[in-house]
View 1 (spheres, helix red, strand yellow):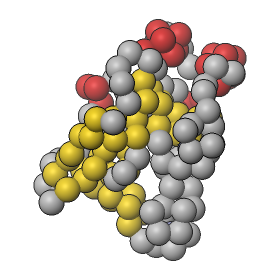
View 2: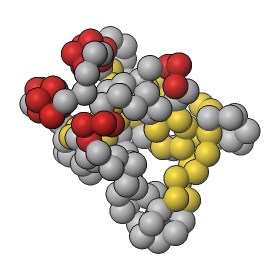
View 3: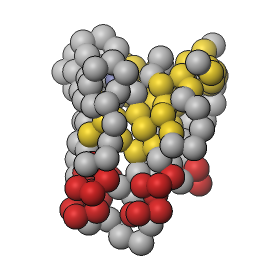
View 4: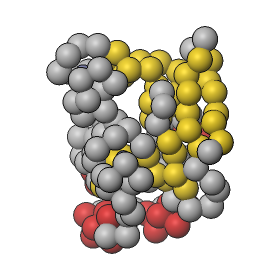
Length: 135
Ligand SMILES: [Zn+2]
Ligand SMILES: [Zn+2]
C-alpha cells in the first residue's frame, strides 16, 4: 500500500489528546481547503473513508436523512470494524475513542479529516494510503 509521510514540523501535524488516559496520539489533519468531507472513521480502528460520491450528495445540505442515506452504503473496514457516523480515531495507547464527532449530522460538512499515525485513508476515486508521522 502507498505510504504518505508527514513531518512532525508541518503545520497540519499535531496530537490528539485522549480523554481516557491523557496520552497523545500523533495525527495529520487535512486543511479546510482540501474539502475532505464527509469522512467517516472505523468503529474499531483509526482508519477513515472519504468518498467523492458522498460529497456530491451532501454538498448543499447536511440532514439526518442524508446522513442515513450515506451511512447505509458505508463499507466494512479491513480490520473487521465498520465505517460509521459518530466513530472517531482511537488512542494509540489505550484504544479509547477520541471524541471528535459530537454531532454526526453537522460533521458531514467538516472538511478537516484527521488521520492518525499508522491509519489508512480510503477513497472511492484513488487507492488507499497509509499515513505515517515522521521526524
Ligand atoms: Zn488513551
Ligand atoms: Zn478499522
